[in-house]
Amino acid sequence: MSDTPPNDASEFFQAVADVSPLQSDRARLRGNRVRKQRNDASDYRRQAAEQEPETFVDGLSTTAVEIIESEQDLLFVGPGIQIREIKKLRRGHIPWQAGLDLHGYTLEAAREELARFIRDCKNNSLRCVLVVHGKAYSQPGQPALMKSHINDWLRQLHPVLAFCSAQPKDGGTGAVYVLLRQKT
Image (cartoon, rainbow, N blue to C red; front, side, top):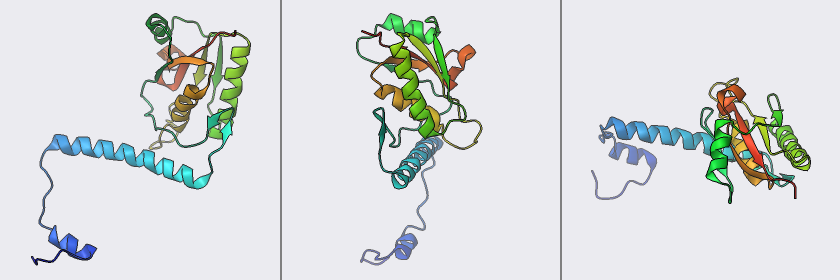
């Protein structure tokens, strides 16, 4: 090997051709899993940024969000919520009074419908509602975009105090119970 550094990609690849990867399975598996998730999320963010400028509907941003896995549990707790209330919500012990099923909606339509639904529920003094977002099983290999956006949008809506994935009888990880502020 020469004393001068390689000046183009082919010389670099020739210089590192005899390098072998680490033999630890644990490190390789962890690295591949994290890298794949980041590539999926960053690809989606890049595509979304290239396709449309950021806009807001009822204060909800259209920018890309953190990608959530289909089976991942969702949990958000705003300030001032008692642990006892969250436990009751997670167990499904707070009866939901209205529901919204977003199957078949585009992201744009779902964002508008969710904002309208939460606003109407708050105006009608509802305490707990169910939002069904699905798990994205209809498109194998695709990220759960609707679930990811619902997770982000609910956090942005002022009437939302807390939310969590529903019990299996109400949709499991394909739905969320949403605890709303009481009208004052």
